Length: 198
Image (tube, rainbow, N blue to C red; front, side):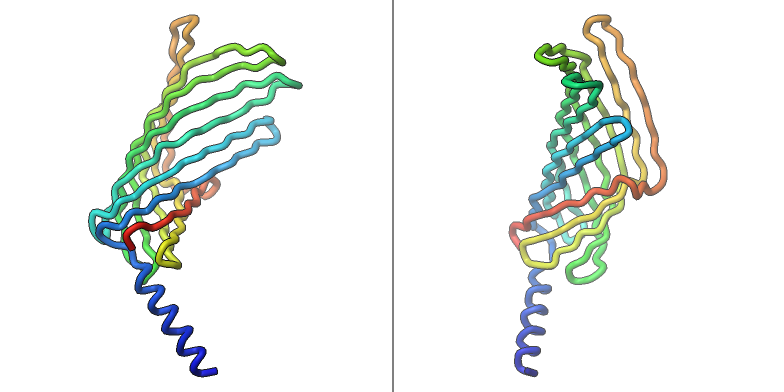
């Protein structure tokens, strides 16, 4: 029994030693988010693949190229759909909390482009053009339990969002600016990563 425990201890120690992330490592993964607001009959899906390259043991750079789609149901077979492509370069600064746990601060700069369509049965009507600009600073935790797998958990801390809607029929644009300060625990982001070079 003692021999089995010793072997298990050695295997776990070796596994944790190899799970340390550092210079030259690449994380490939991202996050998936789904939101459903029943009272408004609104659904949204966010598919956000992400890549991080470690310049050294503490600093990584990378970004996201993602897709967001939402649907606002207005009645039977009547709904509006919004589709947006997102591009977001990112930099992270990591602090080791253990062999396989890092705390990080992430700075993101995001651009989005898309549009809306209205669906009424078999009729389709092109709607407004949408553009977004985002800047955020977020805290997160990166956990690497194995040599090739990592998980992250991130909260929104400080963010600025500019949302512009252009109506091509009237040549008018409506702009909404929003600033969020303070940790928002209602919209956390979970991510799964595959580690290259570790």
